[in-house]
Length: 355
Ligand SMILES: Cc1cc2nc3c(=O)[nH]c(=O)nc-3n(C[C@H](O)[C@H](O)[C@H](O)COP(=O)(O)O)c2cc1C
Image (cartoon, rainbow, N blue to C red; front, side):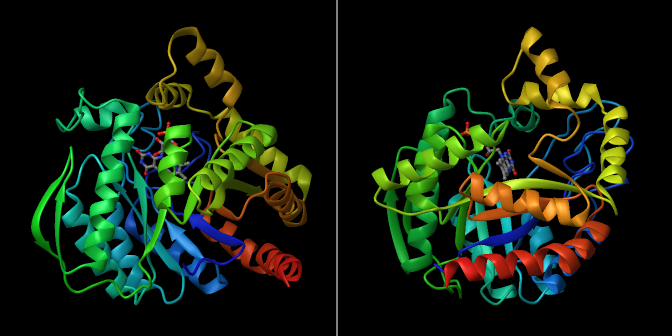
């Protein structure tokens, strides 16, 4: 595995609106050109990875949030050509694609990118997204979706390392299935997982090099981070624990707070509630949680570049995090600022800590 000790990357705006659900944010249209600009800037400023999610249905509301999106694998193939050094991590749903097809897609991505490919595995949770295409499996519950994903990635790993494979699982059967060429990455392309539950973390720590944890506050993020490492220990593995982080900056703390306030004033409650419903919240809980959550649903740092940097360091150090995936209301401005005023300090701080 060739992941750095502390990794910094960007969550590309592959779906409209990004991660701030509001009608007063700068326009993120979910289309290729904006993603390409963000990817090339991430590459230029020296981030470690770019990642895109896999999304097939939005959350409606007045902003039609995430109703417009690119497909992750094909977009990352384009971005592999458009970049030189940054790792290109695509997201694939284990419920939707045959593993022999995904193995070949990631191998192809790895060849296009000359060994920079990574696969983020998601097991599927948003029922409407799958029902619309007749792909929801009523017979497979939450934990069983990870059993299915377990077989799926086992097949993929075997195909990456063996010429012909047989596999007789509950969900997948392979008969003399062949796979050539092999990926360029050694020992294989990066594997990433984003499950939060114990079952999800169990899957991640068994199969992935890095996992993403969320959490409603710093305490919960720290507890998820420690839980991931505990489960990794039980599986006799180590794993990089990563977190998302939205950065809202301006010249001064005061101006940045005003920006956030403007976004809050335009928050799209319809889309926020629909998104929470997709996570399984219902009834009164839904309305209360949506009101409390606000428009920016991931850990958000707000302030001058200096303040944002300090808060990112606090996230890394207090929550025992190995990697941060950055999100912005406007990617060009955010990435330029990160390259000039945040990343060099983070690199210096963490290389000093490692050596
Ligand atoms: C960084 C990150 C990226 C994710 N990307 C996707 C995605 O592209 N598509 C998707 O359906 N779910 C995505 N999810 C949701 C997870 O796959 C998973 O459903 C969620 O974290 C709940 O975890 P659990 O399955 O262990 O309950 C993502 C989650 C995180 C933290």
